[in-house]
Image (cartoon, rainbow, N blue to C red):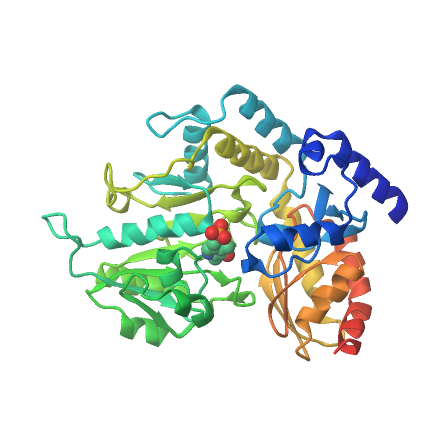
Length: 431
Ligand SMILES: *Cc1c(COP(=O)(O)O)cnc(C)c1O
């Protein structure tokens, strides 16, 4: 791709849009100039952003200096249909031009249709319900409150079930309830005290789970594949054992499919073949095809009635535009038979990665892929990848994660496999 040509195209595109005038007047600032402005105006919680991105199309994005990248991270499993998908864009635009927001004193057809669609896609049993949020952490907050209502006393107070079990390595979000479920000490410690009662048990250890569960446990939270921990799938049989143990003790089994759901693994839910029915599922990342939306699905009548009128709420959650974006995303995934391609391209990538010198282990399912390196060079691989025109992520010192748009083609995947040996070498040389 001609860098000069795409560069001028990127600049003129930004210039022509109304937002170009709002942000810059000319749309000509360099990446370095933008980052200087960033560091004086944005809170430092994300460190320094790697690039300033101005435009995207499909699996490609361009930065403020006109450089092109193949996006193998997809906004961390968010851009399910890539960037600027024409159908999703047109549905969002027309919904916004028709009705953009109503309060939750009202509802709208897109909200109802999306709830019905999600319950159908997940084969939810009769009596199942949906609560919409704006993000993954909010979906897990709602699930946390749901758990607190499990076993509540007849007088409405919280009952004796105060314990919640989560796994070591778990990531469930950054707000206080979801943070209490998240295991990483560096995320938790600065904000204690966190909501109480959460116990973290060893990852994938059925005996530890069975030992931890008793009548005081309100819920067990599980990610089918731990994304932030480096794409670690639960061992086979774990979910079934968790279902049995939770059912026996009267605890809820809550699956956090914020990262793994909505086609990421080549299925609507990563757990769809696990042979279990959970009590609740949380969704977010890929659901809106890039537009912010999350959801808590409660399965069955009993779980769905735990939260009653007035016990939870949100201003933006389930708004017409977000729910239209999700409807459009689900429709495009279905009508373009995206899930079949996810499985094929994912297998191709994993096979190719396993054959690369310096790659010691490849994990994941569909287009959620983690691979380990033979040295602690993952952050340097991210940098070398950017220089070579590829966006990847390092959730650990020797682990790389890929969560590209679900529409990634085999050819695009192949360009990364071909470039990876040189990227690894550059990263090692930089150490
Ligand atoms: C990203 C993520 C969250 C948090 O979602 P946000 O939208 O960032 O709040 C929760 N759980 C899992 C498994 C995630 O990957």
